[in-house]
Image 1 (cartoon, rainbow, N blue to C red):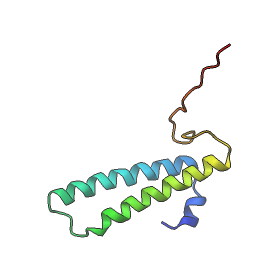
Image 2: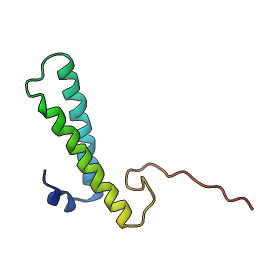
Image 3: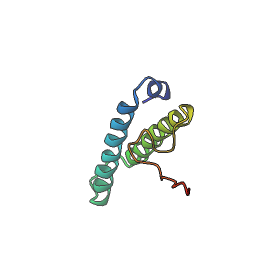
Image 4: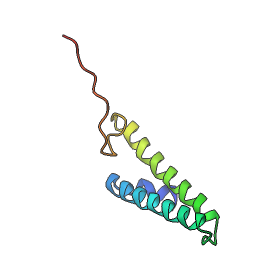
Length: 83
């Protein structure tokens, strides 16, 4: 997956791809722990893929003036106003 391709994806698609990549990491870690992983560099590439997706999501948050975690569905901490 090239960086140029990430810019063309919608935020929902980025989140879906990130979730898939995280599942791949868990699957690869399990295979590595049980000695079934043939290509050990696959785990490294999967972690990099997640990092690229997270970077693109965060860049969009910053560019849109959004608060942290706005695109991920998590709520930002609320600051109570003391009147």
